[in-house]
Image 1 (tube, rainbow, N blue to C red):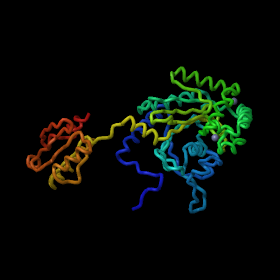
Image 2: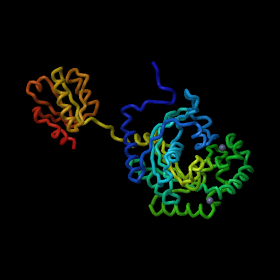
Image 3: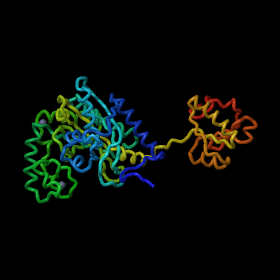
Image 4: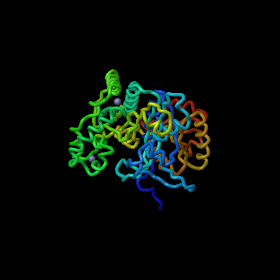
Length: 417
Ligand SMILES: [Zn+2]
Ligand SMILES: [Zn+2]
């Protein structure tokens, strides 16, 4: 038997309703804010991710599925969504008609150690907004994320965390100050942080290592070293969140590792799955479009891991799709008649699941029950002689016998309206 590749899985039919509910809710919320869907390729040139995600990042160095195609080009399966969106913006000249507000959803690929809830093919959805510079865009995006989470029923225990990463002007001096501070505590840092200290001291702030966390807690904060313009932006954002009555906490340890991230960084976390987990992460990246070869364009975006959201939905128990009508036909003649009737009802838009496995009335009714059908429509020997059909309400067991010419789709549609 051939099985799936390690870290990859099927999403089985019984789990798909949760996924569809999440996808449809996200589409409804994103489009209500004026975002349009963008579908980018699943693989791109490797250099796209090296530039956008960072050539020395763990994602690019250790986790990407990179291969040479038959022509010898180095390609990679996308490990995240933003790089492709920025490429699409530049390649399709959308910088000329700003704003450009797009969302995406779909599979991403990373060669990580598989564990519960973490797969090598996983799913993300996110939004990217190009062209808007002020804090209005930041605040609106956070409101949209929270609206989606409320809509899918996971509002309990959500926390919005925000921070400012400053800009090219104010981050340099801050970074030097942070580096000096961390250097005096170098012995307490983890083996991962110590070597990267000279080129990336900021990453120690969000390191999960115990020693690093203790040092980070006492480190100087970016928000105390912002330039005037960055301080105004951050103050504007907090004022808007307050006015919208969206509770938030300022987390000075919320950072991003790459230089083109600036000003606003945010995360939404939840305790609904036990420990504190991020369900959305985003922020400004005003420098990325220029970094990728386009004209400089201010930009902000976020991404959400869909596996974790689906787990939250299951915790909140989204109702499974049940068949409205289940057609049971006993015997060959009844099967032929049943198929014709079912097609007439479907012509009127009535959903009908027909039992195609056959067998006795009893076994077919068992399958109707197991499928969770609301109504069974039964064509047995007697019904065939009388040219009737038996309609059974599976909830209360009530039955009525109807002539074939009485059971048009309108009659059935009225039952499930
Ligand atoms: Zn600044
Ligand atoms: Zn560390």
